[in-house]
Length: 59
Image (cartoon, rainbow, N blue to C red; front, side):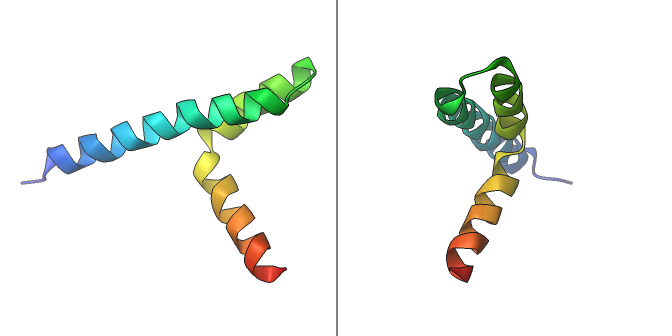
């Protein structure tokens, strides 16, 4: 049997991360296209976070 409590907790953390990422990326947007891209970035925020971490390690 799978432990659904841990899966639900992970989903809740990801959901809070999505809302936080939307707030963060939304503040930097100025035009409609940037707002649309902010929504996309908010959904895929873990990929952007890993990319930025690797970029910082490479510098």
